[in-house]
Length: 201
Image (cartoon, rainbow, N blue to C red):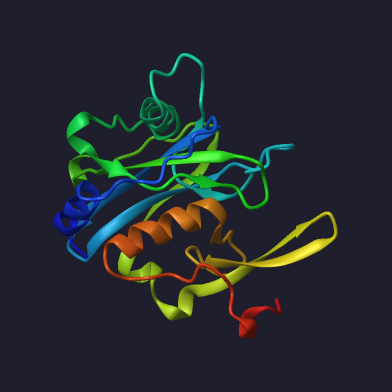
C-alpha cells in the first residue's frame, strides 16, 4: 500500500459531504514505514457518561463555534489530544462524511501523512493510549470479528477489527467505517456488515 497511490486517488475523487450540521471532525493520520503505511489510533479514557468512553478512535472531537472549518476542528483536537501539530503539507484529503449507527452524530474525517520525525506523541487526560497499526495488518482475516451493539433491548452485530488483543477494545463503528474507506482507496476491502456465520457472539 503506497502513499502516492492514496494521494492520487483522493485528489481525483469528490468526497460525499452531508449538508446537515456536523457534530465532530477527526484526523486519520498515516505514517510511511518500512513495513508499509501505518495508521494512528487512540484509545479514549473511560469517563462516566461519555458515549465514546474507552473506544478506539481517530484523534478529533466536537466542533466548536470558534473553529474556522471542520478541518480546523480536526487539527485543533489532534493538537489538544496528542500534541501533534498537523500542518498544510501533511494534508492529503477528505473522506466521505459518516453518520453514527448508534448515536445521532455526523462526523467528517480528514487524512494526513507525517514522517517518523513527527510521530512522537504526548497524550492529554482524554487519551489512555495511542498506537500505530499497519494497514496491511488491519486487513488480515484473523483480525476480523464483530462487536455486539446493545441498545434499547435490540442486539446487533457490527463488523470490527481486533487491533489490541484479547479482552481489549475492538475497532468498530464510525472509526471502522472511515478505516474501511481508506483501505478501499488503496485497493483492498473490509466487511461493511457481519456475515450470517458471524452473527453469534
